[in-house]
Image (cartoon, rainbow, N blue to C red; front, side, top):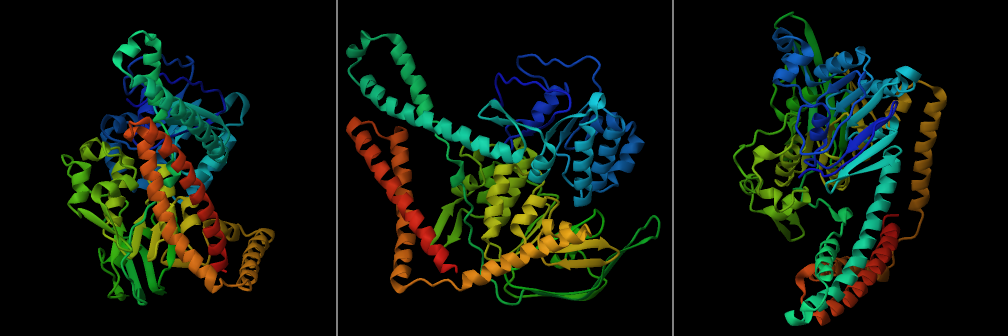
Length: 563
């Protein structure tokens, strides 16, 4: 079951984003609204005179013919790049001036300039009085959500939750909702212990009690097992050793010649660059300027016309391709991973089974035994990412990694890349993602011109706007950050005693985390004796308090140590 008894209304001029984890039913809900998919029960009511336009995530078969008109148009359309296809479909949808626009991942495959233009266009179109455009969209682009949306609908646990505000507001209110939910669960757990003791008495002792109390016990039991703790999900994968020599591009040239028109397209022209150890590079530029080709040249998948790449002997590439991997549809998810390795080396002597590793990529134990053919597009991309990282590469190359990934997966991936002890090149249109994980950019302007910009995407946009005041503001922020760093460097270092304390805390905290997990399992149904439950509950509070204190002290000492 994807969702049950959900109700919502859409009003003129609203810009609503539908958010959920992959596989929860976002695209299915849009298909239901458009009459493309049946639903079990309920009622959908549209105003009679509405002009509706739907932009699906992918265009296939009859849907393509319906939107484009004929097979000849479709043939010309397969020849276009993903970004060019998306632009054409957007233009067609917007030119018809619909009353309501349903968009499924509208920013996927678009270059950054087009995404920024689309944001501005959609904001303006929804403020035109009687002709205001209403939007219901599925997107994972967090800056787009913040800049465009007035409301967020979230599908979660088979229900729909509504938030009147943008993405930042949604994050705040969702955290409050989950905190309140967990508080209710904790109350249910306390009551559950009492009712469990009563239920375990002799059957004849229960026979004279009201049936409603027995029924109520099972409701309490269900509620007591609904604790949510999503923030603990972390990727912890060992990267292989990487030497000082990474790669050097020496006078690389590459030009494509169109077989149809004979027109030349310059990708690189006498390109030279020395890539540094632990460098994290973002690549941006309009569609068709050569971003993906640059990666294929580096990997040796496309030959250079002249010049060469000199790659270090310790470099072990991990390549996440935009096109994804072709998996055997009849294989189970767990078997795909086990074919690569039964056990994953996390470093520091820690290992993880294939099943445990999949759980870090948000595949529940039950989902791991689903056939690949049942996976959604985002779940397939998640499996692709899993298969790349479990090989422990020391140089990651990610080509549009955010397409089809849901926001929880993106958050996990970003944290991993920020702490990745290796090299990184990422091509992405996701500005939020780029701002978090890269330290400088290659900007592909076309005709072989590649600009090396020392900053993230937002800083580049500020510079590119050409406004002197904005440039000075950005420059001031960088100098302020540099000044703060210089001041920090003057702070004191850890004493010998504090270093020893920090080392002990780093040993103690994993042990406390492990004991906490064991106690949670015990309290969630593993224990049957009331005395054991009481003792475990008391110990759980002690462990939690000790762990909180240890984490606070570790943070204090770490901040000094990083000065």
